[in-house]
Amino acid sequence: MSKSIYEQIGGSAAMDAAVDLFYRKVLSDERVSEFFDDVDMERQAAKQKGFLTMVTGGPNNYTGRNMRDAHAKLVAQGLNDGHVDVIIELLGETLSELGVDAEQIKQVAALAESVRDDVLGRGAAN
Amino acid sequence: MTIDAIRRCAGEVLEIRLRIAKPLAYRGGQFVTLIRRDDGLARPYSLASPADAEQLELHVRHYPDGAMSGWLASASPGTELELRGPYGECFYVDDDLDRPLLLVGTGTGLAPLYGIVRDALAAGHRGSITLLHGALRSADLYHRDELAALAAGHENLEVVASALEVEAGVDSVDSTPIDALALDRAALSDHDALRVYVCGAPALVSGLRRRLFIAGVPLRAILADAFLPAAGA
Image (cartoon, rainbow over all chains, first blue to last red; front, side, top):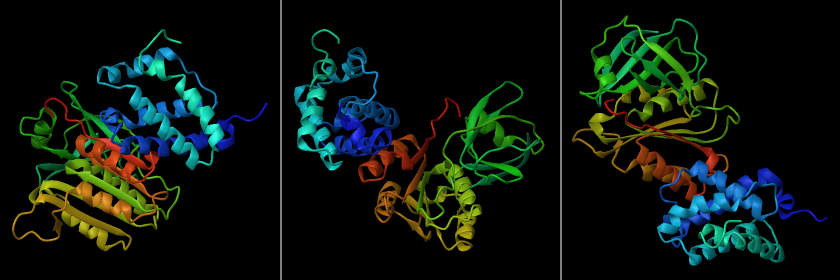
């Protein structure tokens, strides 16, 4: 079996650097930054590490229920598909800067895509 | 724990020195909870003293109606107190003596920074140390002489005072907002080596942390301590 992207990038330690890159992009992007205005940055970074670990195929304890609960307030504030698209775009940029090739970024985007309905509170929880 | 001395400083700040009955293992910048013996009233205060000091030094903002600070302001030397702690992760770590350090604080946010700076100097820190202390009015900047004396004795330490309102006749106070100063200084440093300490008003701490992070400082390199006002401080 081939190595996961998570392992290729360098595992947990590399995820910390990835979170800094990714989180910085999210906070700097006016299309989505408002959703991060009143959050505890350390907790948010830990959550993003979990998310990046999951979408790159690393060890995770992802549940759709957690994702729904975590985003319910944001959905009420107007979080929609367009915002999710921005996040997936920024995720791709982050991985590209870390040297992940385009084909693998597509795989990651597909995994991130699988979370969309949970984030937006649609359908049944996974 | 016994109060040794109380000194009134500028900006309604009380410098309180405590004599410790038995040695307390702590680092400058951590905080302790002071507890009044009579009724258990408890408030957290940062440690401004370096780790090896014989007396603990605290900076307490005196609020006239403050339950604890009002009581401390009129307490006399010899008064006994209980203490818990130390707590917190906002302190100097000697993992790299050459890294630049940037310390930013408003009001009594200076207390932890003063402890951290003195611990860094005691450890033989060689990298640049920049301490930015801000207040609304220049008259509220306290410990200016102490900080100037410390900077005069250490080539790698620079102290910058900032106030939005600078009284006439006051020199060497920068009227640039402290967050702008901090971002300027951070931009001059190697982001991957820099370590930043931000202490004081919650709005400054959270806003500056975010802006420093966006500017390129790694999240884990920004240590912060937001002072949340207690009801009836």
